[in-house]
Image (tube, rainbow, N blue to C red; front, side, top):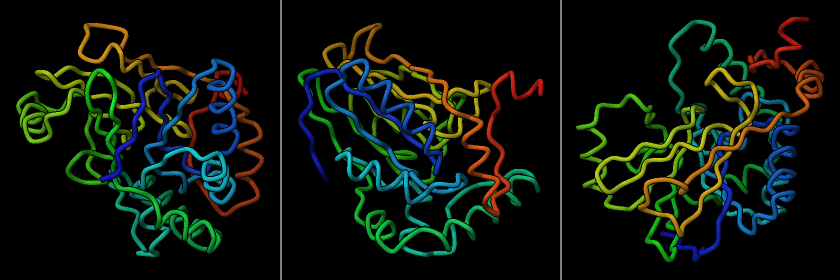
Length: 249
């Protein structure tokens, strides 16, 4: 288990999924705010047109990063991304994404993806924070906000941290269950909550356990047209939420 000491406010994002304009927009916003520490909860690749560029940008920036289920599938060439699809359209998108990403991801990137941690603990003055991709139990478990309280309470007892950070669902929320705050940081590349803007979280560990101010969700617009132009040069058929102007067009 990797442990990282962090006492200042920090930024955390997840699920960029090969969306380079989105990642660049997040990193620029974090730099503009002067946030000293940044963490990534995984799924750098898949669905988007720039898996190599995204992975290498995060690596070269020295951002501590977890392995997402898609990173695992591509890095180890398992032929499976660990995803769950509910419709035929989603299955088609997923099949095209897995095949294309597996083919274009470089050996260098696959080696980097294989090296990622499956979780880490952030040691702060307010207590320890567990960071995972899907859930503390499984890399590809979906923790939606409407999960029954009894199930969340069991998880909080099994993993008794003051806060647990995760992604995977692409839908941000913060939910207090007993003495544990569950925080889904949303998606830094492919949001699914009705807002086309990418999402990341600002966390203030000094407010851990308080009623408010521990986490702030930040929404950032990005160059959607550039993403679509990059997509057009691939065999991908992924859908990304479009800004209102693009929807009207």
